[in-house]
Image (cartoon, rainbow, N blue to C red):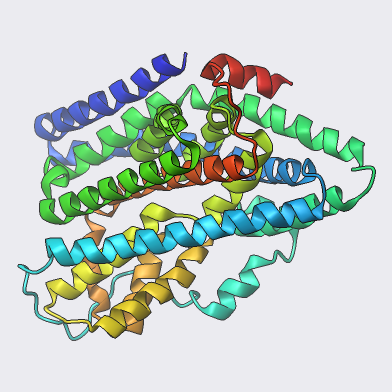
Length: 421
């Protein structure tokens, strides 16, 4: 079943690109836009269904994962290990982006003149330290759920889960209810995922039809350099996984290939979240560890997005012939280390972070216009990398906690049995 779904997703990607090219070449321009708009209905519906299940999934899985730990000390121990991994992975991602953009020099040949005034169209007025910190704590949990504020839901879930774990009787009725909600939402997820190939076909056909084959070749050096850098990051993540969990790293990467492909084809790591909740426990990673690490990872461990921030910022500097000192670049790494942690709560997150960084270092903010044309294409790689990074983090923490099962159950059946239980 898992293999069949993977093939369906792969086929929908190929067919979407082919259909988009046919529409772009065979139809007049005035007919392409309405067609793309109609195809966009399918994608929008799919993404809305995903958003519909994300908030209750994050809340129920995180509360359940924390509550099933022995006590508050266990929560703290796992939390420290998780955040330690996240910080290390963040520094690795940012540094690789910095090194690779210097080696490849993708923007060096553009030699653009620094514009006097130009707007990128990205609003960064709300992206301040004060706003980010106060935004972490929800004024109302109901409001946070209604608006899909993942960071706020994570904070509230941490409080609730820790409180449940600290109580002597573990309030079994509440814990059973949360577990049942998790099982129900995973079942709903299965229904939603059945429509994924259709949504992927519509998304790619619409994009290629409107932008033409040029969307596949524009800024080839920039896009190719970034994906080459992502490949290096994937290789290092695999080595890290192999170092921590041994040969099981091979089966882990095999298990997450479908979620990663989903994230890549839809340019949304949120789409892969429900699927990861199924395949990681089926691959032997403890469900309580998965339920704890993944929601935190989706807020604090966006490896692909962080690499993109350094790569794109220095690409813009190169395009305008602006040299940044070593001290400035180190400062930029530290700045992005902090600001990138707010990505999950900000629309067009990576673009907002990059724009704020450009302003901080007095680089031309209009340089953001250089990457907007291919941002969706780049977002596909960022999203898939975020999925891989969080999956490796969950497996590593499970290994350190002794909760990576020795047996490797068969994925689809095992995942369904564990969900049913």
